[in-house]
Image 1 (cartoon, rainbow, N blue to C red):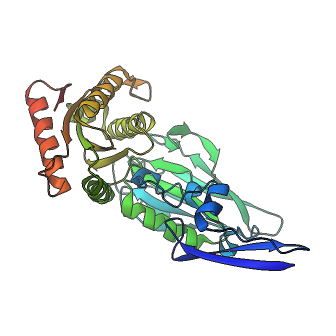
Image 2 (image 1 turned 180 degrees about the vertical axis):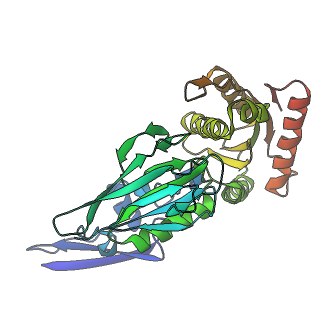
Image 3 (image 1 turned 120 degrees about the vertical axis):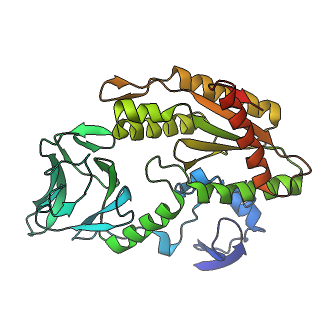
Amino acid sequence: MCSINHTWEGPLAKGRTRVNFVTAGRATRPVATAQNFCRRTRYRLQSPPVAVSDLNDTSRFKVSGARDRPSREPSVREACLVVMYGESIGRRISLGAGPLTIGRSTESDLQFEEESVSRNHCRIDPTIGANGVPEAWSISDLRSTNGTHVNDRGVECAVLNHGDHVQIGRNILKFLVSGHIESAYHEEIYRLVTTDGLTNLPNRRAFEDAMQREFSRSTRYNRPLSLLVIDIDHFKKVNDVHGHLAGDAALRQFATLLKVNLRRDDVAGRMGGEEFAVLLPEIDGVGAKIAAEKLRQLTARHRFEFEGALMPLTVSLGVATRTAEDQDPMEIYRRADALLFTAKRAGRNRVHS
């Protein structure tokens, strides 16, 4: 039995990664280079820039080592809720062996002081196992006015699973259950720094980081880079006619429409309110205008619904592409934003480039 160790540095590794080759009975010629090893295992050392939208999906880039192997399922699990959107973003609410009532009432265990939350809105109950500790949690609506939603579906009673999003009024909470709840919570807090809690898209900060990264790459290798700035037309009317809960649902549905109709390397982000932006690496001005028109038509045809009510939406888009004179990515953004303003003044539901 012999063991051969190789180390290298690369974008797949945080610092240096050690790979052990163990052979039985005879010596084996070591792999000549890390590049050959990566080719055999279908990993690439020279991988393309990672889109911000892929930051939560690390499975494609992970090289497993001893510390990455999952531990055995712990005998005792803990659970908590983390506020993703609404009052007190990032707040953690631990779930124990007793019920947790949620509502607007001061007598609720978890109080949200807003009109969209009923006085007694919902309750979370644990299921106690044979060892006397909780092994599952379920949520029950308490005949609230606006209902309790799990993963955008109204529920009367539902068992909660790890990662479920619970909406109570305009507040969105994420359910976490783990044998290592501290670690899970801190991972979620890190994600909140870069992600918009309502739409699950990169927030403005994360989008601007991606824009800077792609701008540097585009400038260095003289590759095309385009940007779309998007505004939902007359969005205030949606809130006025259907209410803010419906408006939040429309924003989430529009974010989903963006994600499923963009390429893997494109980056969509929510810049604030009803304004979004899309970064298009390797796309020139002509291609960017085609992509913008496609998104405009898809939005106009899409059925945006909330509790049976239709909410027709249209969007206006400004399109800009990097030029040799650009010294900063915000120059591209300002041009696209100005063209968006021109599209809105010209009547909305159109693309300007």
